Image (cartoon, rainbow over all chains, first blue to last red):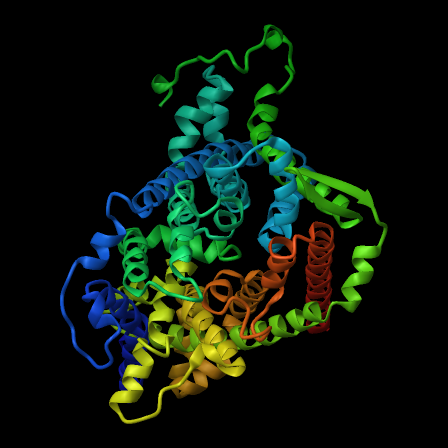
Length: 278
Length: 312
């Protein structure tokens, strides 16, 4: 586009602003990784000495430490909650988009979903606490269900609008050809919606991996907790275990940053449409 | 495409399928899981929340007990100074972070849009903070702000300036969590505005520059007004995120020192999980939800009035 090709005197200001912004973004992350790879003794020494060591990583993922289990818990949580969320939202999004619901019903469900994104999760914790006590649920299963529920509004809204963008003639012609409703959904519409569903999947997975509040209040911080809660146990007001904390932080951050680099397009779609979460 | 179809499943083909309008099983079956989850994990908990708010709720031997107490819990809120402080702190936090992230986000979007070749790369890096876990971001900033081992004090020492306590004093703690939140969420505003900017009709902007308008004049009088809806949208989202804020305060300052960074969510957590005042915590939660609703309704009314006024 012509206006972007046009260079002017302002271009060095642009360069300074953006180089500054990128430095401010990256330097804190580099520092995190530097502390992770720093010999524990050197972390608490003033000045700028750097002594390479893997002690921090080794201590955190020693066989008797809980963090390995917690990373595994987080992986299970992400897979289970994302899968549940995708199944439910694909069905519901398809239904709301294609199954001739009345306008009023669709607006009601979408409004409800929108509202749920606006309410601070902390305000629902007392009610959820009582509910989980009633159901006798706790630990990882409870977290899977809660993460599913709180990611559903975004997933359903996104999926519904994605199905809206597909031509409805496809569905009609397939049903004339005698395909069952489920067959049409499974074999024609779902594959066409795959790009939209992929964006929802990546975005949901990141949200679940990053989730902290429910993990904190509904698990005890031990072998049943996700890794985000594990990091929190390393941040004690009396004594912070700097090296261990940095190591777990790095391990938690790296998969997400890699994903941000690789699946940038899907993440941007998710962030710009689903930023109400977070 | 039809060859790929298998008339199967029988799910939607009850015996009555010959009738002209069979009962639309599939329509209801597809929405059922969503409905079940919402009822079980939203409607039911919200019901319990409201029920708890009107009672004296205690935990006895792993069971919650409830005695009706009318509006006692709500009356108590008026005497709760920490709740008033928390609302004040939340307001300070929300206003500062929303304004700062909006300004920085718009500046970054305008700057990135002026790049020629490296746009994609810059956009990719700039959004990293927005996808990272708040917990990890807290770790990152603890390693920077710590008075003993932090990066900032090391830099200050290197250039001969005295060490600062950062998170240790009332003003520094609030300033620090605002800084961390701005670092975390400026990318969202950037992305919103940048996406909108890329979607603008470039002929309008070219027309302005052909007419001899400078970059700043074009931006100020043509581009920014066109971006107003995106900026308003970003502002709304940032305000909602500000009300929800919890993780960073919990990890960086624990609401302290004293109550200097006790925002609404932190206070709710303390009432519920430190004082075990379940009924009172529920009443607070109900009040916060109602406050959010009132603000939302006011925002919608305001928007509608604005639209009507602009139509003349």
